[in-house]
Length: 250
Image (cartoon, rainbow, N blue to C red):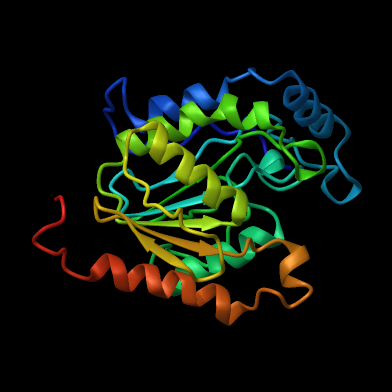
C-alpha cells in the first residue's frame, strides 16, 4: 500500500515565489466544487485493482526540472492515475507512453512512472496540466479551465528557460495559446492550428509542437503510434539543442 508522500523538493532552500511554493499552493486548491467532490469520491470509492492504495485524492501538482527548456502541457489527471498516485501522468497507460518517450529522448532517468517514490527524475523537462484535478468523464468545464489557468501562468513566469512546448492534445494546445495572450506574449495571426507534429515558432524563440494525446482512445485505435509519439520528443530534443539565432531573446 502506498501512503501519501510529501511533494518532493527541488533543492534545500527555495524562495517563496518558487515552483515548489506554487506546487504546494496547487495541492491545497479547492476552487472548483465539482472537481473537489469528484476527486475525493473517487479516492474514497477506489477501484478493485487499486483497493490497497491510499489515493492522493487532491489536486495533482506539476513535476520536473525548474531549469527545463522543454515544457509539456496535458489536459488533467486521470481518476485512477494521477489522482491515485499524486504525480502527473503516473500510474496509467498515458504515462507509460509519455515517460517511455521522454526516457528515449534523454529527458527522464527511467522509462516508467509508477508512484511518487519510484526514483523518477526529469532533466530539462517540466510537465503540467491545464486542470490539476481529475474531472468527471475526463471533461473539465470552461469555468474549471479558467480557475486553474493562473497556475499555468505562474509556471510560465517562473520557468524562464523554456524553448519548446509540447501540447498533448488540442485542448492543451489551445490553453497554451490562451496563456500566452494572458501574459501579453505574441501569438501570430492566423493562429496556429493544432495537428500532430505541427510546429509554430513565436517571436520570443519558443516553439510549440502539437501532439495527439497518448490516451487509450488514440493509442488503441492506432491514431497515435509509438513512432509518431516518439518523433515529437525527438524533434523537441533537436530544437532545444540547436543554437539560438542571434535575433532571438536569450
